[in-house]
Image (cartoon, rainbow, N blue to C red):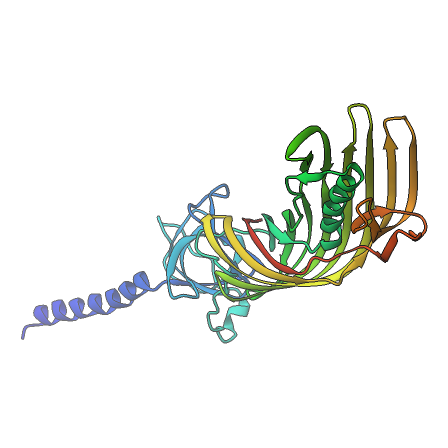
Length: 394
């Protein structure tokens, strides 16, 4: 082999030896470690672009290229999915250099990069967190509507008993029925702090109200007298304030346990028309406070990046409470008398000789030969509750 051929062969081998490391370097990605508490992964290399994921401090990422001040990286989600996005150079430290993009140099690794490289640990998303979740604050706001039970037997019996008592005074029978209060409508709001992917702590308040308006007229000998009537309107209003703990065993399902302070208000608004020109009215409001508890289970479904709908079924337990307040009696003559005291439930003998249930506020305990079975009226709220609502993630 001539010296010229040997020279050409040696030159080719040298070029090949130099090209292989260069090619390997061109394909080696840049390894980055997140140095900020939380780094935003954005859809485009722009500070105004949408955030598609938040990455916690210490997470190791790989970048294949750099565009200006932004690295294009891939991030592995907890469920194994991979998303791509841009992260700003000020939020990461270079662990191992790779090629730049568009001819731009990659920053040199800082001295701390000489330490052993940590294992990647992707951030565990909170329930239903997906690539579209760009929550900046660990706060959820629940807005709901639903229905709950109320046990107001004394209030309901007092309304029916008044209609019968008035009929006895007229010597007539009531035609129609007096309705009862058994349910309250509920509207509520709660703010919850997401302590982890499994737990959140919330503080909320509801407004509940239930009432039933009824009217009966009186008849004698099969003939109705529409001008003679009793109108009743028993009502219950509840203001619960609750401290709740939610546990998420899976992203779209939770259990809730709540300690609740209840403010309960019972009321009556009754009117008796006994002739074309004579009438009498009773109005009263009584209040009580009590503590109770509520447990519930619910499901959540994402409808937008930061919005969910939820449905919940629960059970609440409260003791029966006795109420106190103010009652007023007025009549067609212009007389008006007000009393403050407990809400009493008792039987009073009517003109027909039978005892009829009545419920009114009196300062002193009702007494007399016609008064039977006196006791303080009570209301309870135990039973099943149902809610539908929306959750907004901040």
